[in-house]
Amino acid sequence: MEIQLYNVTKRFGEVTANDGITLDIRQGEVLALLGENGAGKSTLMKMLFGLYPPDEGSILVNNRETIIDSPQKAMSLGIGMVFQQFNLVPALSVLDNLLLAYPTPPFWTFRGLFGETGSHRKVLTYLEELMPGLDPSTLVRDLSVGQRQLLELVKVLNLDAKVLILDEPTSVLPPQEAERLWGLIRRLGESGRSVILITHKMQDVMACAHRVVVMRAGKLVQTLSREECSEASLVRLMMGDSNQRSSIDVTPRDVFSGKPPRVSIRKLNARQGVQSIENIDLDIRPGEILGIAGVSGNGQHLLADSLVGLAPLSQGEVIIDGIVLHSAARAPKTSEQVAYIPEQPAVNAVASDLSLTTNVALSHFRQLRFFPAWEPEIEQTREIIRQYQVRPDSPSLPAGQLSGGNLQKLVVGRELQGRRDLIVAAYPTMGLDAGAAHDIYQALFAKAHDGAAVLWISEDLDDLMAYAHRIAVLQGGQISGMFDPRECDRLDIGRAMTGEHQSATAGPTAINAEPHTRAAS
Ligand SMILES: Nc1ncnc2c1ncn2[C@@H]1O[C@H](COP(=O)(O)OP(=O)(O)OP(=O)(O)O)[C@@H](O)[C@H]1O
Image 1 (cartoon, rainbow, N blue to C red):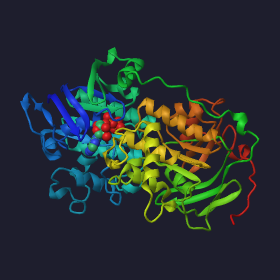
Image 2: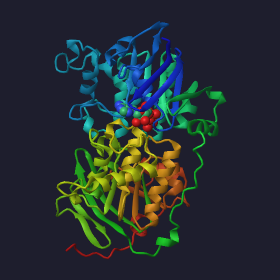
Image 3: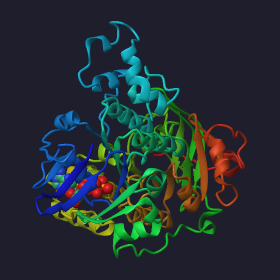
Image 4: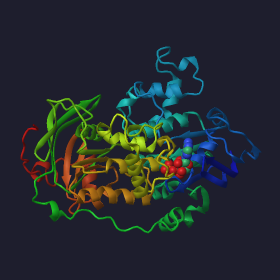
């Protein structure tokens, strides 16, 4: 199947998201669509998937002008799309979610009528390829973010799409799952399907793209073959002249070594569904950046929720400056001492129908008056917009109208306002282009300079090794190793991630200092 987009333009009010784009998508090719946050990549693909009508221009499918006015129409033509946000039913099993998404399920596919029929196996074929070993009766709410992402992809593959649009498919995947996905994408291309890969990651491009299209500010700036690409040239094309950035500073170790811990986590135990964490014992000093590495689904989510007061503890305490903030004896409660940048902020951290200003104000809603004075809130939002270069730059815009990356920047800006003693950041740069990721690291580490303790959950080992002072590995809900990035390599950490490494280079208890503890009054 061949597709041509001809002179396609899309406007949202004053924003021109796509400006006269002409692009062809050839049969059997993997086309990478690259661009900064807000460049217009998702909008272009949403038009191809029938979610938005173009304001100008036309779409040709196999050389015939075609109106694609709904996703159903797109799917009937053989075009499928996997979004950054998931569309799954958490209370249902993996198999039930796959059956629900099956186009017009014949009656014999339903569970219970004929048991595990051949049709069941059909919906499970890609699942077995992408997630070998996953039990199809697992409830979706017990899957990690990465597994949910792959399940979304399996749903679309089951529709037998000829053209597949994947929006940032590897942003939540650990390295080995990303590699499995690259392999599948290459095979899909070889089998004559076309894959459009919206991405910020050069690794994705180098691993499987045949051609690369670079967009900037709504315009298509260049199309290149993979052989013509280098990382430097792509970054230059994506960012134009705006890629001049200073280097990232982290607090020198001697600033905090010898100081008492700002945050002490003592024998933390919690359970939620099938996720659990056990006996987590960590100290973080003021200014220190403690990285948490691990394959997603090993308790990261629950650890973060327990530290910020969103999940009840079954045992243990979280202590800040010697005062108990959370303990098993109390109901969980959030605190303004603690900032939280959760994974998937679009789902977990904003109300998409409310304005940027209201979303920023919600972070300190306990201080708002019954009739809030909005002018300072608008001013604060403007400041975040300026500092993090959020686009469009209108405080009154509903948050749902920001692109995924811009929304992420807004949430990070909101959470890092004011004094914070503990910052829990889960994948804070996921889905961000290189420039935005740089700005976020700089802002996060500046907070550490000001004395905050930072607990930074990431799957990007290169970034953790470059910036974290220590790296704890979470495996099966427990700390399986504690590493000094100056004295270990990726393999040591990788072994701890898979449970091979049992005796850490330095055990957590050896590194932790005894906190001075007193109960909160
Ligand atoms: N539904 C909408 N209403 C108003 N503006 C929108 C809407 N969707 C997108 N935009 C705007 O269009 C521009 C392009 O957004 P788009 O989501 O296509 O960018 P993107 O390149 O996919 O970004 P990201 O990498 O951050 O996902 C942005 O300025 C965005 O705010």
